[in-house]
Image (tube, rainbow, N blue to C red; front, side, top):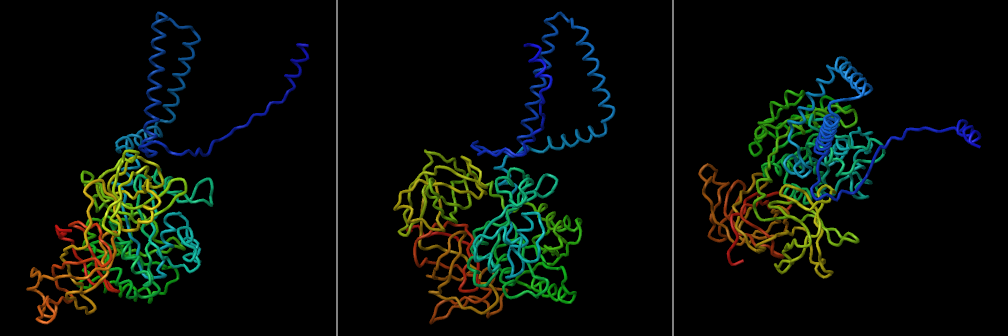
Length: 564
C-alpha cells in the first residue's frame, strides 16, 4: 500500500502560480494620519532594528558556542561574503546613486498629512469670464489627462447636473492638486482602475505639497457667488483666465479689480491657444496688458516662456503679473503652469494663529444619515481636539444667541482625525437636536470661548474708482466680511483726511449741509454699518467688501460697539 500511495504522489500534478497584491484598502482610524514618506521611513527604521537584532542574536550564539562553528556554516558565510563583494563590485554606481537619494530624503523633514494640508497648502482662486475654460483647466490638471475639446475634462469636477448640461459653473468648489518632493504632479487617475479618479485622501497621502484650486463661477449672473468665494476662500494667489480668441470683457475687469482689492497676487493665463489666429491673440493680450497697467491695478505683465522666467518673477509677484499661454487640448504650456504652481511660496501663514482661541468659519451644511449634522468650512485660528468632551458654541442664530454642542468627530481631506488646526479646510460632526438643526445657516462660526454677536460695526473704507457712485448716510449695500454676507446700511460717516490732500476736489469726501457727508470714488472715510436682518460675528481686523450690483469699495473692520 505504501508503494501504491507513493506512486499516486509521484503522478499527482501540482499547480504553482504567483499572486500579486495590487491594492489594500482600509479605513484610517489613526488619530494622527501620516504621509507615505513617514510610513516609508518608519518601515526602513523597523527593518534596520530587525537586522541589528538578528546580528546581535547570531553574535550571542557564536559566543555561547565558544567561538566554534561548523565547516558548513563557514562555507556558507564565505559564499555569502563573496556574493556580497561581487554584488558590490557590479552595482556600486547604482548603489551610490540610491544612497545619495536616500540621504536626500532623510534630510527632508518627515512630515504628516496635517502639516502638508496646513503649512504646504497653497490656495489658488481660478476666476475669469464665462467660457474661458476654468473648469476645463482644473479638470485637466487634477486628472492629468488632456481635454477632447468637447468638455470631457470639466465634467469630471462639476457638481450639479445643470452645470454639466450647460457647461457653466454656478457654485464654488475646491479641488486638490498634489506634488511630490521633486515637483512631479500626482497623477489624478487611478493606476489600476483607469476610469476612476483618485479621491482627496489618496492625493493627500501621496503629496508633499498641495495646491487647492478654487473653481469659481464666471457668468455675471453668479457674481455674488464668485465674490463670496474670493472673500471666504483665504486665497494665497489667483489665476485669471482669458480666452485668447476673444478680447477680455467687463467681467474680466471686475475679477481683476476684485482680486487686487483683496491684495491677492494674480497670474494671467491665456487659454485655447490651439488654432487661435495671431491677430486675435495679439488683440486679447493688448487689452489685458492695458487693464493691468491701469493706475488702480498697477501690475506689470511678465511673459513666462521657460523655467528661468518662473524663478525670476517668484519674489516680485506684488508688482508683476506672470502671463502664461496654455492649451488643454494639445497640452502646450501645462507643464510650465504646473511648475509655476509648485514654485509658489506660501503667502498666508495661518499656522502662526494656532495659539489664538479656536475660530471655525462655516461655509456648507450637510445632514449625513447615521452621523447627523455636519458642517464644512475653514479653521481660521486656533486648534481643536474633537471628542465626547469637546464642547463648542455655534452661532449666532437669528436672535444673536449661540448653541452649545459637542464636536464628535472631524475630517480633513476625507481623512478621519481627532485634531484640526488653523489653516485647514475641515468638516465637523456636531451633536445637535432636531429643533437646533433648523437654526443652522451658512456664515456662522464655531468658537470655544467668548461667543459674541453684533448688529453694528465700524469700518474704514475706500470707495473704488470707476463708475460714479455717491455714498451718504443711509446708503444700503451688500457687505462681504470673510464668510459673512448680508445687507447693511451706513448709519454714520466720518471723514478720514489721510489721503485727501492729493485727491482732486471731485474725489474728496465732501460735507453737504442738506445731506451730510458725501463719499465719491477715491475717497476714504470711517463708516458705522448696521446689518439689516440679523446679528453676525464680526471682530476688528477682518477685511470687508461692499457692493450694490458692482463692487463699490473695500475696507477693514476697526471696531465693534461695546454695548452690542
